[in-house]
Image (cartoon, rainbow, N blue to C red):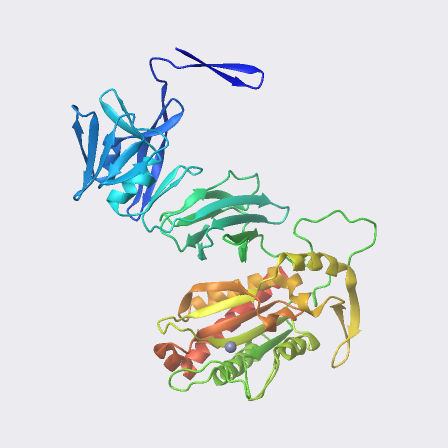
Length: 497
Ligand SMILES: [Zn+2]
């Protein structure tokens, strides 16, 4: 039994043996809301088949053979599939479904091709079955199972873990002792994790304890991280977790330092080297701009001013630093004027204070933000180190300032701002309720022009009745001010080491 096929000038002999070559292939992973189950796969003549008895085990179906007719009936809750060995067409509750490859009966077992699962089985299960061949997954029903492909890049001063997520799916990054957990808003993950390059920031990258998490086990060099999210393309998202060492004092250094082209000295310009001398606090909103408003009439602009004043008193007495508020009273001030104020006062740190609002009244807790800067701005950050110059500053003296676009001022301080945001989050978490996403990056206009480490704090939700009552009390505002002071003390230590 020899078949001869002509393919150009080459003659290929295909031998059709009287026996079939079978091989055990890795099982399909069946993902459902109940978790993962393996479904064994047998390769017969280079085609992937699944045994019907294994299907019965996984899906709870039953099968009855009709030897006389050479057929098999698979049943579940009154629905049935009738199939015949070597016939490409199967009947699903009376409806005909075509298969590219017919079912087989071998060694008293029935085998169906893998495509049988999404094409026929899904109809009697009355749920969607999604066969993902690349990942060798069978996804059952309405399971949110994004494809998550991780990539790890080791720089000299950082390690970056990038997750490409399809379809784009929200994720939270949670800090725990010895590890950073990425928790996706999904039921399970269709996960591809690489092996790690040699470095000491990250000792493990593994699936987490729950099926929707990935764990980054941190190494000795890790001190903090920053998280960036972006849209990769139409359907995909990208989440980057950058692991950083402690005491990164040179914010102007590119993350992967390029060789310096000539002997010209590049002056790192990052403000006073002596830590925290001047603090600018920005009470959000004011004047005509009320900010958000609680159901009982509490105004964001009043809360933020009250907290800022309390914080100023604490800083002046405990930290010995100069403190300026962007507004001392109830007045309207533009966002750009606020960061310009901080720049003119040679602030070493800029903290903007706000209260939050959400459509969902149950949302509560504090959140800390630092600036998102896109890739294009990172280039500006590299270049900006070469453009430092001294300009006269308000109130005498001079300040090294960068001839860079105002828009990119903050880009050079992102590492320090990330650290600041981290300290603020830690300090707040010890005293007041935190939101489920306590540290985030966002393109806040008020932070963009700040030429110093900067963060924005949303101290709670005025849209939550319980929090509106809390936020209006002096006791709560004192807690917030005390936490922010604690954070600034930590941040000063960070700057000085
Ligand atoms: Zn606000």
